[in-house]
Image (cartoon, rainbow, N blue to C red; front, side, top):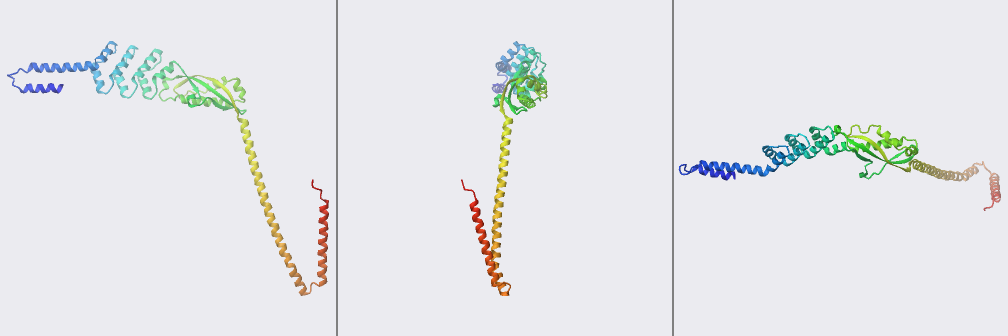
Length: 355
C-alpha cells in the first residue's frame, strides 16, 4: 500500500503543475497512509492496550510494537502485568521482557510472586527469576513453602516398598518412612533436591536399626528411629526444611544372622571336604608310590637271586664250595620252606569264620 502511494505521488510531481494542483492530493495520500497505519496498530494491539489500560496496568502502543520487533509475545507480557497489578504488585514491562528473552516462564514467576505476597513470604522478582532460570519450579516451591508436602522414603515410584536393615541380633527389619518437608526459598538455588532427602533419611534409618541391640527394641519403639534420624540435621545443604519424619510401617524380614551362619557352615563343610579329598588323593598317590617301590625292590631281589647260581658256580670252580656243602644248603632251604608252609596253614586255621 505504501509503495503504491509513493508511485502515485511521483507521477503527480512529474506532471505539469499548471494543469493539476498536486498539494491537496499529496495531503490526502499522507492522511490515508497515516490512517492505515493507525488501523493496523489498532487491529493488532488495540485489544491488548485496552485490556491493560482498563486493568490499571497501562502499556503503551509503542511498547507493544517494540515487543513485537524484539520477538517478545506481547500477550504474555500484558497478561502477566495485569495479574501483577490486580494483586498489588508493581512489575515493569522491561523486567518481564528481559526474563522472557532469557527463556524464562514469565506467568509462572508472576503467579509465584502473587502466592508469596499473599502468604507473607519474602520473595522478590530478582530471586524468583533466578530460581526459575535455574530450572526449578518456583511456583511449586512457593506452594510447598506454604503447604508442606510429604515424601515417601523409599521412593515408591522406583519400585521400592521399604528400607531393609539388620539389627545386631541378625534379624532383618523392613521400615517405611514419610518425610514432611517445606521448601526453603533461600536455598532453592544450589540446594539439593528431594532425592538427596530420601537418600539421607534412608541412610539414617539403616544406621539406627543397625545400631539397635535387638529387633524387638525397634518394634517396641519405632519413634526412636524418627527421633534419631531427625536429630542428625539431614536437611543441611538441601532446598528443603525437614519438619518431621514419621515411621509409617515396620515389618520383620528374614533371619539374616542364621542365614549367614548356615552359609558359613556350608562353606566350612566344603573346605573340609576339599581338604579331606586332598589328603585322600595324597594317600592314594603315596600308596601307588609304595607299590612301585615294592615292585622295584622285588626286581632288585630277583636280580640279586639271579647272581646266586653264578656265585655258586664260581665257588665250585675255585674250590671254595664242595658238593656236600651244596646239598646241606639245599636241605636247609627245603626245611625252611616246609616250616613256612606249616606256619601258613596254622594261621589259616586260627582265623575266625566269616559271618
